Length: 85
Image 1: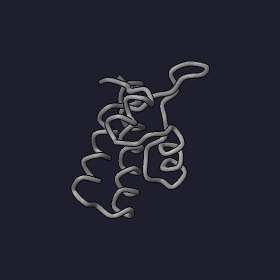
Image 2: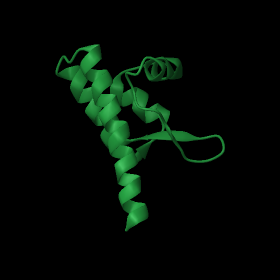
Image 3: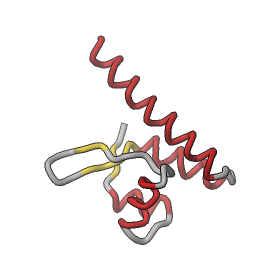
Image 4: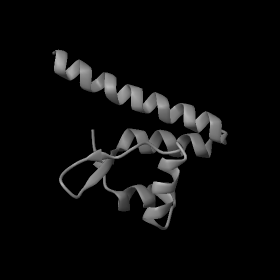
């Protein structure tokens, strides 16, 4: 599983600024970042791909918000399964 930094996310999703991604996060239309270090974050490739696919498919903002919630839940379950193993 790859973790993409914001520059890659912007290119993949077609956004020009960091602010665009962070605005989407505030609106619940993009997943929260994963902390990589003291001053760096990134996003799992699969999450970015899923959000972009939903946009391409013409999903509504409500549907994308629901997808973001599912992606966050999946992230938590993945972590729990690693800890329990």
